Image (tube, rainbow over all chains, first blue to last red; front, side, top):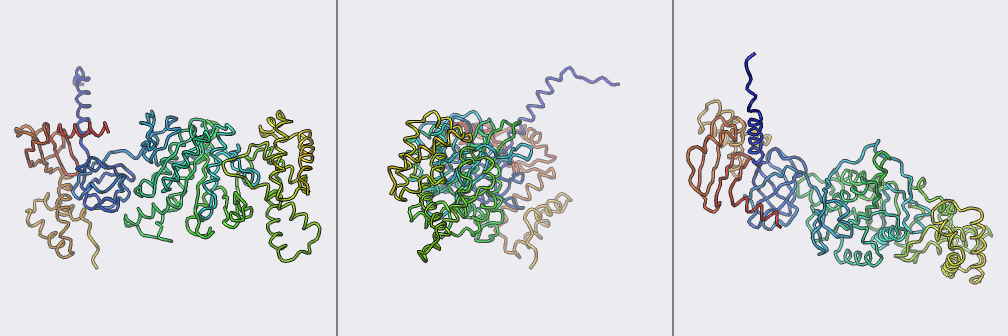
Length: 508
Length: 127
C-alpha cells in the first residue's frame, strides 16, 4: 500500500474549513425588478425557499422581506417595512433563514410588534431565545385530551360552555357586541384567580387607541405582568398583520413547551384574512370566494392547530386559543366565519339583540357550543349547572311565544319566571370576573328556586347580599369550594340555608 | 396563441448553443426575434442576466470585480478558485467609495469583502 501522508491533517482540515468559509461568504443575490403596494418582484435568487427572508439594500438602509411566490423567472416577496425607499434595481440578498421572533419570559409585560420589537418605549428586550414564526403543529402522540379547566370568570361561559386548557374556542359576533370584552375578562380572571396562565393578546389591525386603552386597563387590574401584547395597527403593512398571529403563537408556544399554560387571543382573524387577501391579490394569486385566495382555510387551520394540550412526556403544558371573528349583520354563514367555526372546538356567539336588551355578556345560549370543554369543566360548577343551557334555551323559546297571549298554564309560567331570573343572574359587569365559589353559589340559588320569590329587578341585589353573607360567615367553606371539587351535602345545605335567608330581604 | 416561453428556458437554450460552439450573434438572433415577436423586448436585460447564470452553471463565469484600488493579475486565479469556474471572464472597475477590499459579482452570487460593506453591516447591527 502506498504511503498516505497524514502528518499535515490538521493543517489540511483548517484549509478546508477556510475554503468553506469563503464559499459561505458568497451571498445569493438578485435584483428588484418591480415594486409597489408592499410587494417586490425579484429577479434571480433561484435557490430561495418558501417564506425565506430577503434583505433589500436601499439607499436608506436594509429593508427586509419574505419570499411567498416562487416562480420560474421571478419571485414575489412581501416587504416587512415601507416600500418608499425600495426601487427597481436594488440588490436583494438571500438571508438563508426563515422568520424568527424573540421568545421567552423577558417579553412578559411588554407591547411588541410582530417582529418582537418593543412598541412601549420601555427599552430593548433582551431575550435569550428565538422561536420560528411558522412552525409545524405538534403531532398526535405529543397531545393529550383537554381535561383541565380554563376559567374565564364569566358565569354564563364557565357554566354552559366551559373552556379547557388547550381548546380553541371561537368568539364570534357583530361589531360592538362585547367580543373583546370577553377576552379581556378572561385575561383578568387569570390574574385574579392566580391560575398562572400567561396571556398573549394579538391585536390584528386594531385601532392603536384601543390597544393603548387595553394596556392601561390591564395595568390597572395587575394583569400586564403576565401578558404579552403583539400589536399591529390599521396603518401597518399587510405583511405585519399577516405575521402577527403567527409571531404571537411562537411567543405563546415557548410557555406551552416549558410546562406552563398560555392563552392566545387573536383579535381578530377577520382582519387577518383580509390582510392575507390583500397580499395574495397583489401577488396575483387567483381569487376565490369573496376574493379570498384558495388557501385561506389553511391560513387559519395551521395557526389554530398549534394550540394544544401537550402529553405528559412533553411536560403537559398547554396553549389555549380564543380567536375572534367579526360577522356582518349576524351572518355566520359567510366564508371566513364558517371556516373558523369548523376549525375550532366550539364557539361563543354574541347577539346584537341581546346586547341592546341589556343582557350582557350577550351570549346566545342556542348558537354557542363548546365541543370539548365538558370534560374539562370544574366539578363544582358542573354539579350545579346540569340543565342550565337547556333551561335557558327553552325559556327563550317560551318567552317569545308568551308574547302572543297571557293565558299560560302554571308550569309554563314558572318556567318563564325561572328563566327571567336566570337571565338576570347571568348578567355580569365587565372587568369583574367571578371566582368558582361565587358562580357555584349563585347558580345553585337560582336553579333550585331559592330566589323564585325575589322580583326579577332585585335578583342582582339578592345575589350580592347572598355572596356577601357567605363570604362573611363561611369563608373557609368558600375557600374549599373555590378549589373546584364537587360541593359536599353539608356545603349544599349551608348554601341552601344562607340563600333562603338572604332572599327574604328582597321578596316581593 | 403560442405558449409563453419562460426566460429561464430561453437562457438555457442560448447557453447550450454557446457551449456547443455556435457564434454569439447567431445564438442570440433567434431569441431576439422571439422577444420582438412576443413584445417582450423590455426583458432583454433580465434575459442577459439569465444567460449569464446558465453559462455559469456550465462553467463559463462572467465576474464583475469592483475594488477601491486597481488589482493585479493574481485576482483572476483567486476568483477562479472561489467559483470553481472552468473559464472566467472579468469586468473590472475601480470605485473609491468602497474604501478597501473587493466585491465580486458572479451570476446570482456576490462576495462582498469591501470595507464599506463591513461598515454598513456594523451600523445595521448597532441599530
